Length: 100
Image (cartoon, rainbow, N blue to C red):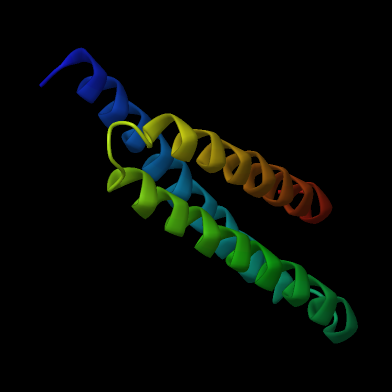
C-alpha cells in the first residue's frame, strides 16, 4: 500500500469514526428529547430530523469518497470536509441546547 493510499485510508477511518460518533450524539439527543414537554419535543424533533438529513448527506459523501478515483480524491475530500463542518456545527449546536 502506498503512502497516498495510507493517507486515504486514515482519512476514511477518521471520517467513519466521526459518522459513528454523530450517530451516538443523535441517539442521545433523541433520548433527551423524550424528557421534555410535548411542544418542546416537537421543535427538538424537527432539529433532530435536520441532523439526520445532514448525517445522510455525510454518509453519501463518505461512500463517494471511498469509491472515488485517484484524480477525483482531492475534490471529493473538499466536499466531504464541507459536509463534515456543517454536520459538526449542527450537532454541537443541538448538544449545547440540550446541555449534553
